[in-house]
Image: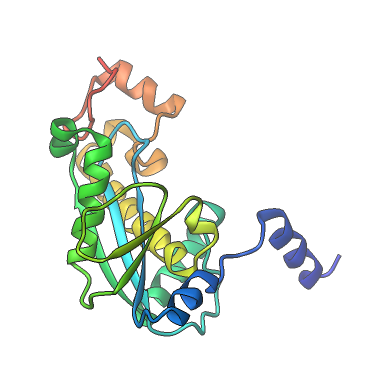
Length: 210
């Protein structure tokens, strides 16, 4: 099987990439600036929740822009750098202490709000991955599975994932016993074994853990 055939087979297995259908539909209804927003970090035991808000300026990507979970770390990095060059980007981060205080759902909303307010332009429509309402002064459309449907949301998912992974790699240098660079704070066997041996680090959120 040739390289092109293998690439096509891999694409079909992963599903069709996201498109600009939702963005173009909004533009036909008069929206001049459409943003996409997504987050990463709701599920881990440790580390922050990170959100990104993206308004695409250009669409001539030479790498696949897709749900970050569909891409390898190398492809995410390549996509990240193209998005930074070809989009307006805002990032929001909510750290562990705040997550413990207000719970992960409220922290997710807060991170998304921070990402929106850190965006250098202000869209007149926001495509939001999932079902969360963000209490922002603009029209929003919630898109379940949006990171696999909207190119703007997919770009936001990549930016948020890369930003959070970099943070967790940095934290691994501060707290090496928990191997944060390997699992990024998620509940793997290795992570649970480290918690059993060393207890909780300052990065752990604490729920259900001893």
